[in-house]
Structures are given as structure tokens and as C-alpha cells.
Length: 150
Image 1 (cartoon, rainbow, N blue to C red):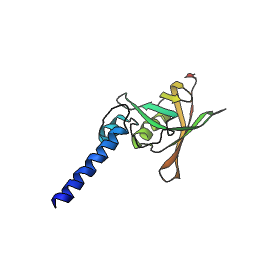
Image 2: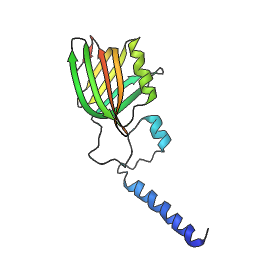
Image 3: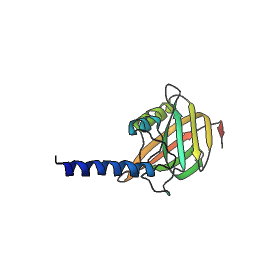
Image 4: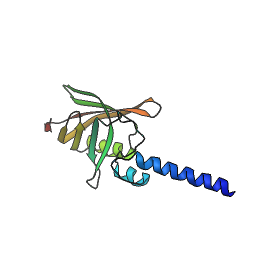
């Protein structure tokens, strides 16, 4: 590689890092792998209008929360229980495995955002993930509880 090409490559890398740092007003630098592990939405590439309006969390086998984050779509109640729908860019396999355990064993389900709920004895009726557009999913969950705090 010539000196000129090497210089241009170095400048390009510096410019990309500079733009990444400027897009991070909280001055938090986290690797993509750690961010995925922590389940934190820290990407500076989203528009300011694209904020989470709902976070649904359940506990994993170690007692740590695992969540799906997205935009609130629907909250409804019927004779059979409650339904929540949100649109998300990602629904992790680990989250689906954890929420699925609520169909055989009652557990904790929390919702934060537009509506705050804490359901201690959540009994899962059903869940579904539907791809609405490329990169967007609709996640819905139906559950029942006799001890929900709204």
C-alpha cells in the first residue's frame, strides 16, 4: 500500500471514530458485544425520535432480567386476561425462552414505559413474533394474573 493510500485509510478510520464519539452525548463507550450482553440501547445511529416507549422484562434462570424493547402498540384486557403488543427491531431468542417458561410456571413480568406494570404471578397464555417489515417485528404476549399492579 502506498503512503498516500495508507494516509487516506488512517484518516477515514479517525473520521469514523470521531463521528461515533460525537453521536454519543452520554460519553459512554461500550463495545457492541458488551452492549448486546447488557441488553442496553446505546446506539447513536438512531434518530432522536426513535425512542423506546415500552420495555417488557422477565427473569432468566439466574434471576437476571431479559427484555424486549420497542414502541408501544396496544394494551388490552379481556375476560381471559391481558394483551400487550409492541413493535421492535429485535426480539432475542433468550427473551422468548424465558417468557415461554411462564406458560408452565408463574413468574414475574414487568412492563415499563407508556404503562408501568408489575405482575408477580404472571401466567402466560400465548406469545407471537411477526415480521412486519424488513428489520421490524411485532411482539405480542397474552397473559393472566390475579396480582398485577398497574
